[in-house]
Length: 110
Length: 117
Image (cartoon, rainbow over all chains, first blue to last red):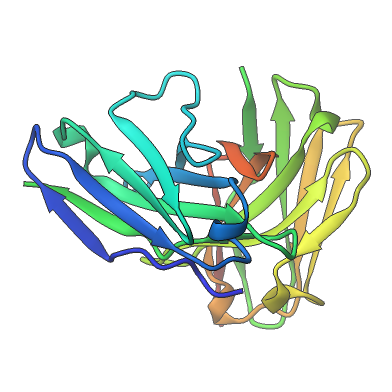
């Protein structure tokens, strides 16, 4: 199972919006609405921020939003804040009943 | 509140085995599965495998098939991951996570496994 494709890095200024893409295949992202997104700060465990493409776990800011079109899922962060600087990973269920992650995207808040 | 508490860091020599534990609390352990995820130094997340805490059914990442075994002890709400024939490529932080409908809802603090001669 190949990793999902994410851009290595994105950046934005405080208050702006950014979008991170996550491209897979019909066997994972395109075939299921079980795409989730995770935020990871250095030295910390990942944190779930979006699940089932566009749903928020309790306590997560609605500045984070998710969507999907075909084999590509997207995470949008609006109103960028300094604390959003972190690594972001997408994950999907697969047709083999496994899970697969994206390679990760480093977000820099300028 | 849901907590997953993992065992401490391990240092192993090449060829050895390691067994990492993950003790769950704050929810009914057998309701969900546990996935294991690893992260090599400076690298991304890699799914290792999943175990149903109810039935014991497992599903492992293809690249680790034959070297990894996941088990649970429902009497202590603890999940275990054993990895055999370790090489330097297995050096990573290993996380357990509560797997709810294919999402990793809560994570353990991570266990650093270092493989070095």
